[in-house]
Length: 222
Length: 80
Image (cartoon, rainbow over all chains, first blue to last red; front, side, top):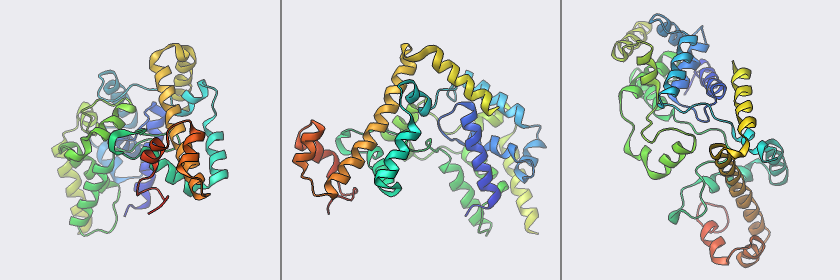
């Protein structure tokens, strides 16, 4: 579904989120991930519009000052460390005693929405940061399908991010459970991905960028 | 970049400690996230070893109904 370069971009996006002190992964980090990978077509398209990694990082910092994305916050491991608990030791011991499969099942059980809300937690330090790039990846996949491609490449991912930035998230993504998950990582209640505000702050015209990516993809087909 | 941001965060965390509600509450939330998973994994293990809800509840210090309501769902691999 995703080609190797796209997977690497998502890895780099995680890296950028963590470096920024963001405890979630959003489409705004995917934009930074694209810029981290200079060989990609997505990075080239962005650079042609005057967007580079340093400018994008600075723009994200400004978005944090405006409260569109959260300010840097300590990680779960750091917070637990302040309480004298070593997260990695807890994880290792639990995995050794019960196995990774049982632990994974327990993580899903503890974080699933329960009727009546008995003992539920929106997230746990034992699972990676929540991911809000689902819509962008969905759009990228739809574009790939429409163009008859089996795999999402970097350009299609960029097109997905731009489409996501221009369309509202479905209502199901702002149910009470998801809102609670978002506030737990410091995101504002109305957060729908910040790739749009990020690109606009960098002087990018989303419509023009979307058309340019589509054109590039059409050109590659011929 | 990564090291710089991370050490910055650590420094902030150390400087404010849990005197700052912002940090202290977040630490408690992280701890609760940990506890809920450890409880779930222990309860599943106990059930797999034939423990009754009654016995599990007694060890957890809650009522039988509380444990049952929380864990006797369909999704968790306890019983059909």
